[in-house]
Length: 393
Image (cartoon, rainbow, N blue to C red; front, side, top):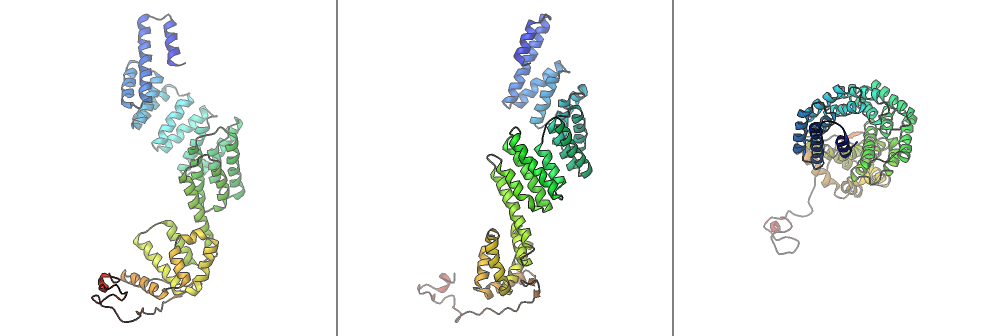
């Protein structure tokens, strides 16, 4: 019953006129508080609701709206205390129990949330979202046994009500990822549910895809990427961030696959660049691996050409250096420069040939062609300007 209908019912009732007036005022102020909340005038709404609560301490509607207002205004503890009061008055109400459980989760009180969610699903066994949160909480506390029981138990019970869950199937995938056929079945279930069930906002599906990609990346079970791409294709107006995330995981799968067929040094260069770290240590490691390539060009050049053909996107990550290495132009100067940089930093690179063996470099000293040009001499380019202000600047 909405506020207007309730006001008409009060007006038509036989109660005392003074009480009738008080009730109508109470409803009017409650409506004003709701409007303030809709207009994001949270403090105004809270002031009205707190005043109403003083007049009617057991009005559950006022308490529930005030709990929401506290949460929206950044007062989570006040919101939780209010929800606890409501639940104490209505311990058999599944909705109030679920609201309290969600408040605990938002505050990262996982154990409390877990306990309250168990109460919620006992009160409302057809509450899909409550079951999903229960399974997720079990995963958060890293109790695999409980997570398994809650996840598969939830799927079984919801199935009795004809309810299916994408999130529960995603969690089931995580729990069975080492069992190829089982895990693949849950990805198939997700695709089937996306075709059949009521459509949710793209962000809901994107969250599921992001969780699947995280799990695949952590476990390095990249064989599931094509199935996850199928799921991603079903998402309308998919965000660029998810597309980029999918691309990153695909690239890492490609890099992992390289380990079995390419020299470790080339794999190391690609992995280091993929990590995106430019700290001093990583840069030294990169230079050291580049030195390895330059020392054994005959061994690495065929591998670089194969990399360019088989994995063009990975080759592109360091194409400038790879192109120079394939051409062999200025090999001695390039190697000398890198070795000097390492020496000045107090480090000696470990040089590895393409076949995996170590090598101590024998580097020819770079010798200039022709005599040294003084800084105050005319530039040999013919500009008529001193060398120091022309090509030697």
